[in-house]
Image (cartoon, rainbow, N blue to C red; front, side, top):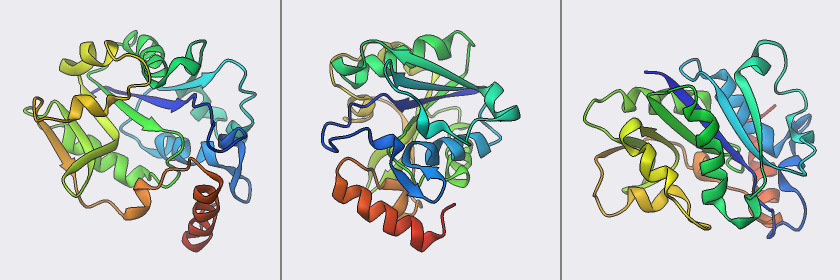
Length: 209
């Protein structure tokens, strides 16, 4: 299965009050680089399309994409990022679909405790031919990261406004599988300064480098 990742890093950081992806999560590691490092370490993922704002100086990429890894990473600047998440998703999909993947893995840049191990387990779950998607599960609900198979690409391209892909996973209209055995840390997302402070403390306790 050919998998391309779309890394959503074009949020406006309104609740944080400053560009959150460049905030230091651990010594030498920016918040925005943590989940990207996990993607780069996951052998089952081919190309990675990182969707950013036009004005992003990409300081959070420092030390992450170098050498062989840099050849797998394609940074796409989304001119309509301020209009909502759906625009960032479609921007990333447009680039990703050019490579004719069998599945698209959507990962959020503000979920810093996603691991290569969990991503690998998600890809393995997605190999089930009956599954149209595979997502990380918590209390029976689907959460990102999410692997979408080819049959859902058209619906992803029709998302609008500030609508993320969660609507497509609700209601049981699509056949999906949930990876229920994820650590609680995977579901941590950083939107506010309080979230960031908690994430820094968690990173320190986990020895994140």
